[in-house]
Length: 223
Image (cartoon, rainbow, N blue to C red; front, side, top):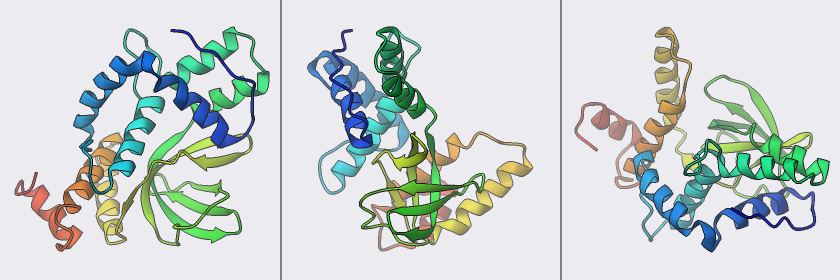
């Protein structure tokens, strides 16, 4: 596996693009094919049509940040950061990509919005974060979304992969989280998958209230 690292540019979008471009090149065609097969188990079907770009963004987000490369114990992100460190790249570049590995993947609710930033709350642990973005068009207070917060220097940025939920799902989320905590559960990854499945199922039945879709899924009447 060969990485030719271009001169460092400290912009967040440039860093993210640098990472992605290396691991979607022709060298990784087979790796991506394997990953797409695995991703089918994460409640997202990668077929063209309405919302395809959103689904593809979720796939590449998982592929770069979470999935281990074949025959290694490292994700593409971890491999990239380790390679830069061994190559004695610019220290700031190494630190930035190592920082990326501390990203926060969760379901968030937008608490407030200002000039160049929004404040979000992790719906699982109630921690709040300030996310700085140049373009905040499309974000509104009370929005609920699955997203990934990526540390960048002293701020957080969105990775660019989102799954938005209707506000009505908030009560369902709170109930499920409360039950899990009573049972001692602290790993909420299963919740991400469960509610991702709820959203993608609801996308097929948008005329039906999402709470009804949830009930039918819980009763095993919708898959």
